[in-house]
Length: 265
Image (cartoon, rainbow, N blue to C red):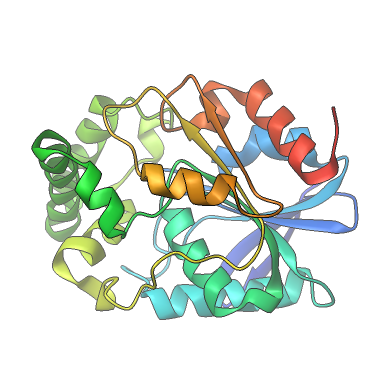
């Protein structure tokens, strides 16, 4: 995209584009990079300054980044891009998991959150709603990706790209490598400290939760939807698509985000 400014925060490139007083920090998940948000930046840059980064380790950097280190990087990034006011977080997939933890640890630096397709990922309510089929499906693809990360090299990357094809990921296959799988190794093998210290999701700021309705299983519970829907200033929106909502239904997603952020009809 044109007219982007790049800064470096603790070895991680952060790209900024747009105008406006509001700063939106966008975090992607697997198996994506900052380019996942290209269309979203184009749709929002007239009203906001949009900041993006590729999660450390997904392209370059450490083999795995712990939850504590990721939160520290996000704090450093927010302090650089918006030193005088809190930011809006826009999160997807693993970006939700890292971003939620950051928002709960540093609520004074986050004004509101737009989260896509991953909600109360570590709740008992979600686990109870999954049947044996859903539990086996989740374990199957996640352990496969965790093992691919452990194996590494060409074999790990081939395993990763095969799973990405099976899950119909919209990312360019050439950009996908085993390096992007370390969150799954954290989840299943406790790599880099794992997620045992991750808090149950209790966001103190307003949340717009957007999710794809057409998936074999959900990453949120019914209880989560009900709680968000009745929280002051928060909202829930389901769209007829899969996991990558901003790619599958960009016009509907961006219109809903603009309506929630700025009250546009």
